[in-house]
Length: 143
Image: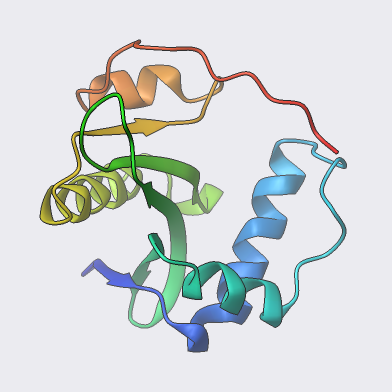
């Protein structure tokens, strides 16, 4: 299987929506703000510093990762955050998630980021295995 990691465009909105639905289902997350629309994906992708990468084989989406880059005063340079990462169940254990994270790291380095982090509890060991370390705790309040 030849794997391609591609930067998402507006044309990838429907596969991204399907992958986000899968992620919400797996996390049993019914706190979401309703169903995603193509407009939501387009808004996300057009926001400065946001990007998404899709892992695909033969044009079929197998997983995705979203990444936001924002200014950071503490580090004196931009900071990148992996927000969502999902590989479809049938394709897990094939280094697809690792390939997505490595592409995100490459993107963050190209953007002169001082750091990259990941928002996770469930996948902490996975990220540690890719070189991320326990630096902080992210607390959230959903509205």
